[in-house]
Length: 351
Ligand SMILES: Nc1nc2c(ncn2[C@@H]2O[C@H](COP(=O)(O)OP(=O)(O)O)[C@@H](O)[C@H]2O)c(=O)[nH]1
Ligand SMILES: [Mg+2]
Ligand SMILES: [Zn+2]
Image: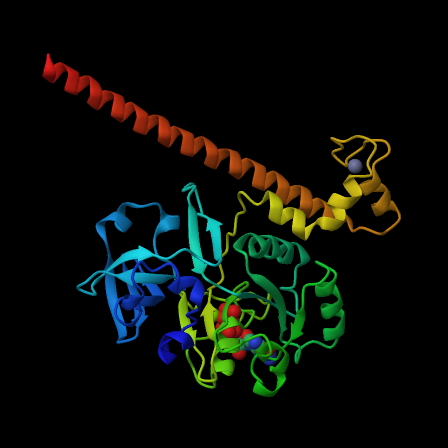
């Protein structure tokens, strides 16, 4: 296998999907950035900016190439013809009224959920990211930045650890390369890592420090509320000089969840286990007698906040999932109607 494609993260999973392995050296590439209808891809022969095939232009957002995708170009090397099956996909429900699942980053091995040791730290947001990560099929690592500014970084580590048992937590001063051994240990030569988290937590700084030079612009956060400004406007896949691939995902204000039943179960396993001991199988854990979840809260074994967030995410997920299902069935009904219309017209022509 070519050195170059290997350093882009190429593994047999993708090669085995090619009808003709001969095209590895010519038409196979990885998407490093997406700008509207154009994508930047890197192939054995170098970097190119390409368009989408007509079929891909018309396909649903989720099927169009995203940063991190492995793709096959057409013969002229100017259009993406095929998006290979993904190993993992970090996605979200489109912001606003546009209920469409959008791909954010594809073929990520590890998701760095970046949060800082200050007012920005928020357990409920971490739970949301962890559910999206489980759904993506990537491995989560919580990266706690700005440990140099916190008097009590240990306290933040403890809080981060309590969010989901077993999820690794790494501390970092994103400005200091010597503090990043823990973070670096997760980045292998062919590993793709995506950095997610609110604006201002230090994603771009971390990327630059790991790369050893400036790859992404950074900007100072507001003093009063520790909120960041949006500097990075697009997602890009970067190859680190020391090996490994990093995608900086700029702070997304709205990360709505949909179709996450299984993943919410993974993040809130403790609550779901407790719920099995409730007297009523359909217990809503609100006022029911014999509720094991409420008992755990009384006994201070479970946090009020965690239960409230679990309920909130479950509700949000159910609503969005129903809306998506309705929209899809409407789409099918409409397609059926068009088909029927064509058939009637054809019949008229025939008679
Ligand atoms: N002291 C300190 N400052 C940091 C750290 N990480 C980021 N910053 C600063 O926080 C601000 C926002 O960082 P940036 O990388 O732009 O955040 P992004 O929006 O997540 O990409 C910049 O002024 C950085 O210099 C850290 O670990 N320690
Ligand atoms: Mg940034
Ligand atoms: Zn209950």
